[in-house]
Image (cartoon, rainbow, N blue to C red; front, side, top):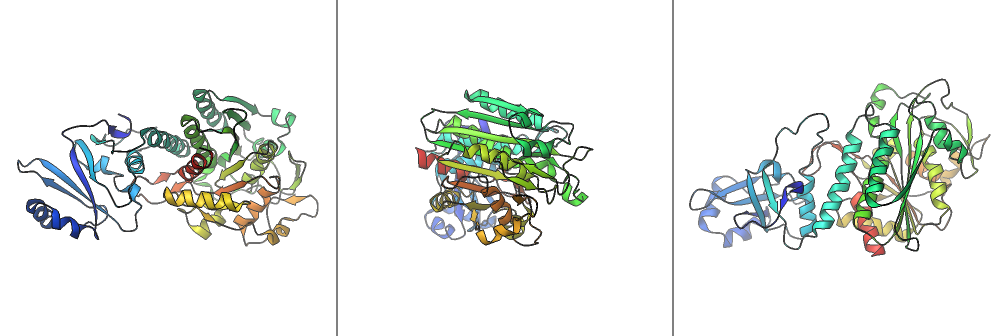
Length: 459
């Protein structure tokens, strides 16, 4: 009974989703007893409100669910597994424009709780019969991928370092029959991943790169890259306590790409998938990377370290250079890269930087359809000069206080060959407030949008 979704049940209680705008039409056709009950209990279709309507025998006969005008249809049933009485329920009337697969996914995500360190406060006994027409496989593989990413992001750094995150990736790869390898510690230097090594060498937990491949060799190449900084102290440019507090989630890009890869492989999408996850801890010790050090990257570009706390782009640049060497049909990276993106767009709207208008438009359209939104920001070339270095080919940061998210994306673009469709996703990966189906804590932002785009483009 995954996610409290079950096969048909003849005795299931019907659920009707009603908005304030739609409740008048319902009243015109509803039984007088139900109409009067809704009125007596003050149910007006307000978001988050329920009316438990009894049948003639006094048992629960119907559930009316209010839906806000600004909420996407897929979340109409999210959270009901925790609030409804024990029993089975079926969707009799969904929200206008509600897709049964997305409604089932919303319900499934509403059952999520992070329980690694404590039991769930209350085990829900409310079960939903699969809505008619729902694609069960799609809903389950997306829910599984999202919950995997949420669990990894929520796990504290004392239990999830580079080795543990690499092991989680290996499990996903092996379960799907993917070919995989992990390059660890000084072997990163031997195999020419110098910036991943430079960022991670100061930690007692060795840096590593996970690399796995799945699918037919002649299928379109789709490559996913995820930032995996398992904890970010800032390095010698040490973060203050307030800035360091949430840095267990600085590996969220890797977690999201891993959850996405799991869903792609489970769905057997017709692509040749490659996943590159650079995994490090940005720590402080005697061999830590220093400000104004110069590192030669995998691509041969020399980078002056303007700030050791801009480490995410350093580990990504080596992975992106390797990804670009195969000239994939689509290259996507995800990263909790800049606070500047959060200042510009807030925590709930990830920034999209893209060098291909068709790819950007497709991702934005998929995000809108899936209620997994993205907002495109410019790769504004005149700002590239802000990354100029007097001693190296490029600096990893700008000295300007402006356009931090753009300059970070421009840095990454230096390592992607022109002509390769590339998207960079700068994400928060954290719900700062609870909403139905999206509890406070880790969030796999962009996973559903990118999956839908890949499935639609390469089907």
